Length: 326
Length: 214
Image 1 (cartoon, rainbow over the protein chains, first blue to last red):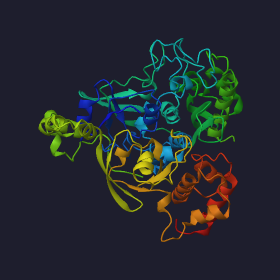
Image 2 (image 1 turned 60 degrees about the vertical axis):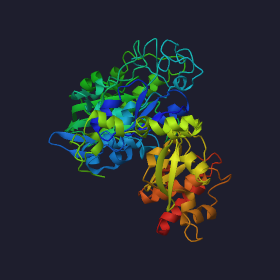
Image 3 (image 1 turned 90 degrees about the vertical axis):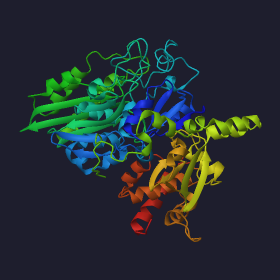
Image 4 (image 1 turned 30 degrees about the vertical axis):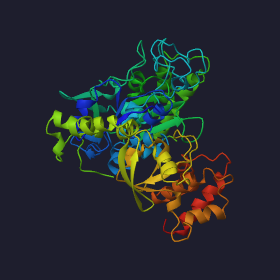
């Protein structure tokens, strides 16, 4: 690993003073960053440790749930308020990584993790995300894990987070701090599609710090489910995952939220499928119809065409679990 | 765990160093502090002590407690807790498997929580209490989990075993050892390429059901 400077500014304000310098990166849990530094995928000159900042709190507010950026993935997933109000988030977190990694990884860091595309990690291969202009190794390569939605001719990588899929479905808001104050970003607009700039994963400015997320209250707690399909039972990245949340009244769907992981450069919210579910009976036929709508516009590559079948099946299955059919 | 800290609450504990930006820059980093006291460095350079200067620039003081023993160390920021334990403290029980957080062989407890020491920077455990496999046995008496692994043949080559045992102890303490299925899920961060999984699960079940203090 390349030598770097390690600093721990005392306050949030003093963190904001130093993070905007080129070659500077923030470190929280470090579960992704340290790995990337060991492999030479990223080589910062300076790490800014923020773990001492008072951003670990989880609190119910008048309108929702506030979770600090430094709350650990394990803490959030086991938190009684989170489980009672937003069980989908707890389920998604428990589906991610391993217990050891969840004890280190933070909410803000989870949002900032980089793709697990093997061509991004392999510094001997071209990758527009790692080295803009070098090309994409995955496009014509072994692209089994890659995107079926929203890809560009520069990048077909997917976002690896489970937590983010749940937060996208739950209309969460990201709260970020900059020198001029705070701003709030809808979760679905936080991450970006690759387009011509796959090197940029999200809309966080280089002088900004994620300080928390807020999830507005909803009526989905009774009928939520996170279903993750992967190559082994646990401790693997998703081939496809689905966050499903329903509000059901007398067997009829009153409200629905759906998002998919493992299929796009960002958590993939399924707005059209959600609309199609409203007013329908909560049964398998409705779910299959919604899944078919969700798949419109999907495009597979040589090795990931199985996702075209796996994704709608996973949506249907997740909705069956959420509605209590299975 | 619930906390009263609101993420956006104003910082109440103000350090004497953060009164303004200039003071912050002066005092927030060891390196800048040194940069702003050039006299000894110039003097050292004149006496051909470049190596020592380089060391001063690179290393950060870290104090930590490992298995009940306090240590004051000088650590390069890029040194992981795993390498610090193995190479500076000669505690080689903690194993380096993948070195990328994928196998769990390096699992240790930091302030009671199991973590991958290969992805933890040594400078980030300043002031913390670390427990490694060497810290489990007490007074020549093996920890119940160590006994159970021997009894149930919870290993073949043994390389993953220290990590498995540290994880297994945490698994019970966390309350995630209530069934075979739950144990398998909560032990998924520890890979055993010999495939001793059924025996590892048996060992954990026995300790859990035995109700001993872990």
